[in-house]
Length: 337
Image: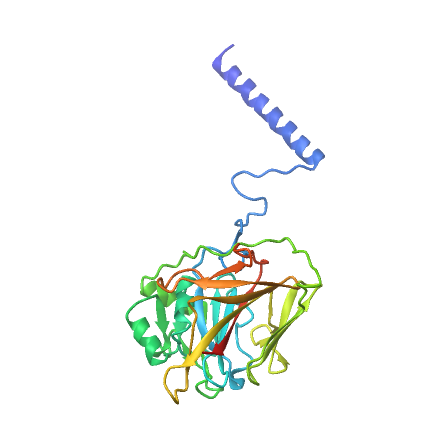
């Protein structure tokens, strides 16, 4: 048999096998792919903070300081953060938020306000790029010593950050993640995550009379008082502040979370007559974790000797608590020392 005929036989056999394979696939309902998923989409991975599958799970988190004053409500992007830390910053319970973004990309974030020293260890512990509009003296001194990557709006007012003329200052400062990441590139900041993350589980814990908790209340003074109500059908908590639903201006939807972590800690006024308080956000203290309609009593811990140490939450047996996947709110609940 000559070489040409042998080649024709080989090609003919290959075609017959390929046709047979296709007939088997379509008749049996099987599918197959070569080199990628059948949809052509990138396989999504769980994010390190919220445990949500998203395209940006490897993106470095960005922490943005937001104000809580009534004049700034509703806030833009507050409901789209993977995590929010809420903390009183004055003796009369005026609070501030640190919203951390990894999975979602809100079209606008604001109103952006100043850095506070108590938030810096938490921002560093999540390996975030810390965005803020100025700050109190202690915070700015620490950030100016380059303890962590930050972007200060006072240096980029009108470029990376902007003010809306329709809103009275200082409640009119805004930005978005595209602008912040552009500046991060200029600063040669890493744009990929390094935070080790939290463990998550989809398993619902067993409920009993002692651990069922369908509401969470933070007794900050009005209009900063907060409550969360559990929706069993959706397995999430809906947020109310000052007696009104907390709304995200971007989405016009009520803010919800899968996990509410209450950090019980201490605070004090640095000097008599000072307008700010100092809150302990390193060390350890009692914690209550609310998820899936139950309360887990335990402990929070953060190594005070290492700024970028992780903030841990442990149950009463000393095991790290596994969170329900979804957005997390950390409510810092200080008492006077």
